[in-house]
Structure formats: structure tokens, C-alpha cells
Image (cartoon, rainbow, N blue to C red; front, top):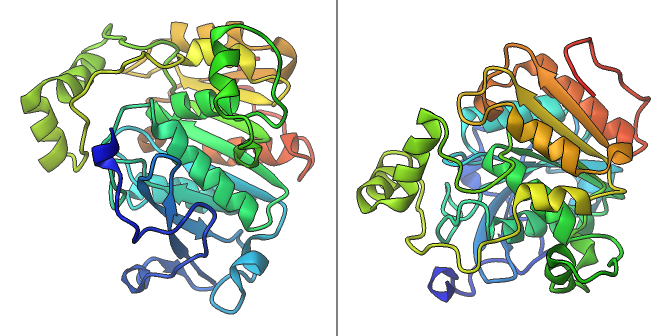
Length: 328
């Protein structure tokens, strides 16, 4: 997919933050959002944004290292057809910023990022670039929180970018060996919200529509011009490690699986499969009553609990307990 790579105008991985005048209207009274162009390992330019924690002094008056060097950063991975500028993603960022600094970005083929979407495969490289950026800014802990497609990406990213390579001969270990030497992109806690457990699921009308939008030429046109999402025309070759195959490779990193009982895309066998495959000592499962799908349906109260869980599991806040709407 080298035709998706951009030219040399993008910043190198972990490069300096650049502010965009186009973002002047997207601010809070005390904080300025910083925009950056990141570069993935396969050469795709990724649009990213840094939001300081609420109550901090981060902004134009600080250098990038000073603004971001405050313990935990939460990196948000949006769902298919999302982007960092979508209202739902911005809402997630604003809630998370009450607990930690937040990095949002647009996956390849989405928003202002380059390339074309591979719907969960090479998007792991996009997330790795965002995590690496957070660490280059001085964050001592990074949590990843993904929604729907982004949920599958954070699971695979955590399995493939581990702080210390693990031995073994399985498929997951072989995939991980390809990423050795890139441990600066590892995460310290993982949250997968509304994530699929397996690929090619077509068991709901919503997912049959998604597959049409991805696999058919007419669907890709609708995705490009109607949904502002550029989808690659090539099938996966090889098929990437699935989320349920990635789940057991994540431990001892803390993992939280969150799913709604009204999810119209993936029924409850998906989160249960993920939780069963993962290490029970490091995994929690929340089944949320009345919750639909991904960032568009996530209520502020749930987002608050997710952020509190991430800060607690990375040692940045007292342990937070649920309100009785969770399992696990």
C-alpha cells in the first residue's frame, strides 16, 4: 500500500507540535489545543491533537514538553467514519480531559489524515504514532481508549507493542517480533468500547451495511463522499491478528472491555468472547445497561468512569468503583 504514503511534508514520528490557525475556534477559555502532523512507520501522515488536562496551564505559554509532561495521557481511537473533529470524539476528549491530558487523532483515510482506511489493520501504526508522540512529550503513562473499530485497534496495538518482548512461537508472538525495538509505542492500560471480537461479522443489519460500504465500489463511493471516509479497495492479505486472538497477549497490561446491551452492531457474545480470551487477573468487563454503540452513544457518566478507571490502573488516582451497572 505504498501508494497511500504521503510526501516529506509531514512531521517525523515524535516530531514537534505545530499549531494550526484553523483550530482557533476549537478551544476552552483556559486551554489551547495543539495540532500536530505525525508520521507512521509506513509513511502516512496522521492529523493529531493534544488537549491539556482541565485545570492545567498547558497551552501557548508552555513548550510542548512542559505542556504534556504531566503523568497520564489518554489516547483516543475513534470508530469507523469518525475523526478527531467529529462532535462525539471531541466530547469524549473533553470528558477525559477532566482526568488526564488527552490526545485524539484521525485514523488514515479519515478527516485530515492521509492514506486510506484498512478498517483495523494498518491503523495499529496510526495508534502507535500517537502513543509514541505522547511519550516523546514526557508522559510517564499512556492509556489507550478505542471505540468500535478503534476498540479492535487498541487491542491489537497492546498485543503487538509490548514493553518487553515475550517468547513464544504462536502467531501473536511472531507478529510481536516484527515490532521489537519500538517499545516506545507501548501502552500502560487499554479500554476497548463496543469492539468486535472477530473479523467479517455480518450478523446484524448495521454490520451488513458497513460491509457494503467497505467491500463494494458503490459503497466506497458513499463512504468517501457521504461519510468522508476513504476506504482502501484491497482485501486484507494476510488477514491480521483478530481482536480475540490479541486479547490473551495483552496481560499483564490492565484491560477494560466495555459494551452496551443495546449495541446494534455487535451483540454481547463479542465482549464476552474478548473477556474470556483475556487474562482474568488483568481484565474487567462492563456490560452497560441501555448503552448503544461506541462514542456516538456513550453517555458522559460512562466516559467519566472509563477515565477514572484508566487513571486508577496507571496509578494516577484512587481506585474508582462502578455504580452497579457493570459486570466483571
